[in-house]
Image 1 (cartoon, one colour):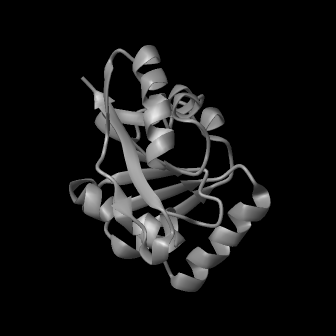
Image 2 (cartoon, one colour):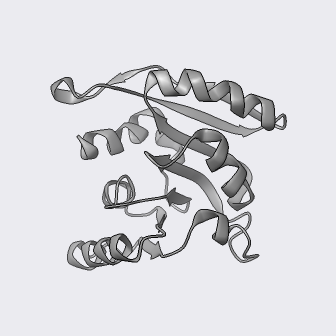
Image 3 (cartoon, helix red, strand yellow):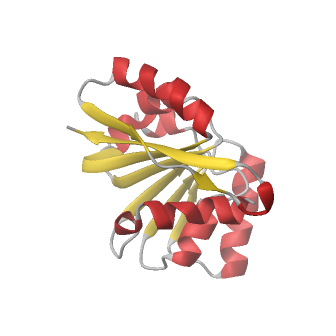
Length: 167
């Protein structure tokens, strides 16, 4: 399920996963979607952001075993990263899958996004409907939308994306 779910981003926004682009995967956990994206798009830079040292070490080991030269693991919280000038305005795309509510993610990491960049959050259709209203209230300079629904294989549920960029 996690692999299929991770790959949906390639179907939804293939233009965002191109050579020379940079993706921040917030709260990568066991490496989803960062590992899958790095394998599927070897000319795209992927930064896996994970606050848990144990999970970060797991992903670092997976990166070594898979020889993924385009994936770097950063062991810190996204909100901590956003306080560091070297990371601000660095990413074309920020993703998050099963991390936190959209409003919290947006508030914590919006500074990491390049001008013209996009935030794409993996959500269930119900969660997306509930969370997009809050996003629109707190971020008037962003345009937020919900993607069409995707069915995960083997009756594993439905997925959609909340996505937004500066107006």
